Image (tube, rainbow, N blue to C red; front, side, top):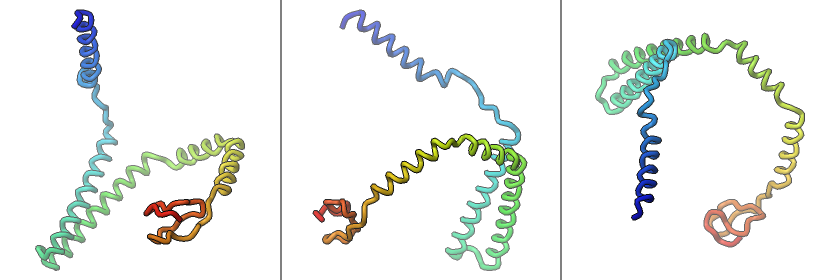
Length: 159
């Protein structure tokens, strides 16, 4: 091998290694706000309550838990889950006021131009012309076929 080819190969390997190592070299931490942390904790509580409820249902179906214990534990878990869901709803209600939602919707509606409506109507007309009519069923497998199909899409038999 030529010495120039060795240097080019070495430079290429170094560049690839630097490109692959770049994410590990940068120590940028993702900044998480206290609100995001609280919401994440609430989601974790919700998931824990759901998993515990599933385990309780499974153990009850196997007969590991008596009926009188099952009813009390299930009610407690349902109450805890409902409380966590209420907290999540309150948190999200504070996060996105309805005024922002309405403003975003109205701005989106204002962006839609009449040209888009004309284009949509042309597309709808084209699709309605292209719709193929049902041609019945395949004589071999009974799968529905279109009148434009020459072969069954299920079994491949000529229709």
